Length: 312
Ligand code: UD1
Image (cartoon, rainbow, N blue to C red):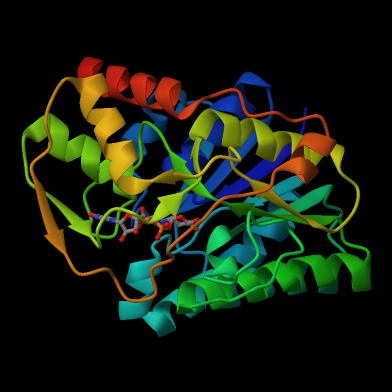
């Protein structure tokens, strides 16, 4: 049995990870400030996890927790998760997405904390609109927003703390993760959570740009399986893309989803968002090289997502 800290653990991806670790009989501690996360996401496992409502930016709190709990695994998912939000709140984003991460790494180093793995969750946003395609982990970096800059910097700190100080670290770059429990209630929420809500509540959906922007959508269950495999089975400070390896224009995803739901979406078109990426697709060879293959096609993932919302 291992002891794991999940920052952002009642959020969308974090709560799926918490469920999986509880099933694996790990001891799970969650720190989340509930900015996007929701306690209902862990309602069914609340007696099996320890939850702290707290920001990761409070260094005294984090230091005390790290000293007291002596975690084996740290999954760093707490973040301002929206690219567009970071354009509006660059300084706050920086504090959460970079400073808190380096602070935690530094505390682990300075106190020789005996962790088994520190996993940082970076983003495909770091590739920006650089020409190489699809994106391998060695592709050019072109961070277009505060979000992408901070994710890249934190990822590099994570790798470097591994290389320089022999701390077991690893980083992942999420592509576009979707699935149940993603909070749809902010204008900065993930696009498919907003589409789901609009379909369900018969509300108009704002499409930024013409819908030709592509994304590599990956189902949350695949993401969590990849996170556990990467944290437990790799022993090098390096970075992995986590994605499906497919590229789909946003408007096509919307049409597929409309067909699955049997509902037509009322689309209002607006100008593309500042800093938005045109094309995104991962090369997932490195992930496959450690024996991981995504199990969920976009169609199956969307079908399951819609089923979840129809039943809940
Ligand atoms: C997403 C994730 C980010 C992750 C990145 C990796 C969220 C909120 N963002 O960023 O954490 O690091 O993938 O690739 O989960 N759009 C609309 N209407 C809306 C909302 C969005 O048209 O109401 C468009 C956006 O302009 C964009 C696309 O949908 O072109 C995807 O947007 P979004 O879901 O915010 O994701 P990314 O910016 O790709």
